[in-house]
Image 1 (tube, rainbow, N blue to C red):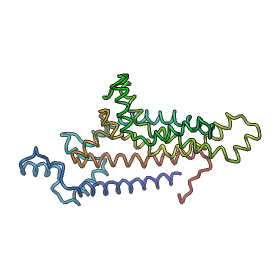
Image 2: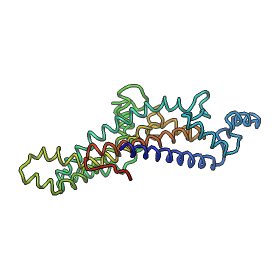
Image 3: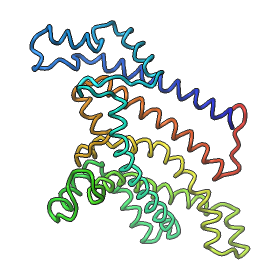
Image 4: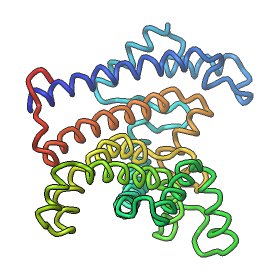
Length: 308
């Protein structure tokens, strides 16, 4: 297993290098720069600022310099947030995005898995059709539409919960629901499909023929195997929501990592865009590695061979 982990870490390094290269090339391929603004009228002022951040150097030197700093764990200074470094921005924004993401993932699992199991047990009955209809709606409605509806009805019209802001428990409820809408519906459908497949397996029918209690069959045998596709989905899901849903954080005025990223894209803040992208890519690959390791504990049949 150690060899497998080391191999995946090597893949992580290659993936991060590819992400940096593609993102760097795409940013500099777009005309304009972070300091092409009306407020910088004098050409001398803009040239001085670009020299300060080494933007006047050839692109290959900027690229190699950035790679060297990334290896040292330094993501560079922000070009628009005066006196702040990208590491500090991630340090400040990520905990808020992670808390919001953790709650949304928890809601998706605690609600989606039981509903999916219930729907599978009521297969082709009205309960199953109702759950699937709601799941299709949940998957189809974008998060920003759901967020807007929640703000309008519960924040402005009914005034049950704060419409925006961050700091209290009440202010977490609406963005967490908006962020968990798609994943909850997807996990529900995924759990239902997986449960239907597992419940049709021979070992389940054998257990039923032996008179094993339905609860034992459900929780000890069926659910343990049916949950594997959900675990697979959790890897990219956690990485996505933990780094912040850009639109949801913008709508609810949450000072998380997503809001910083949206602002940096609008301001052409190269270092913040690269830093958040590298951070997200690292988290995504890391979560996928952890998911593979969790597989071993959920399914003893999975063995990591040397060639893996």
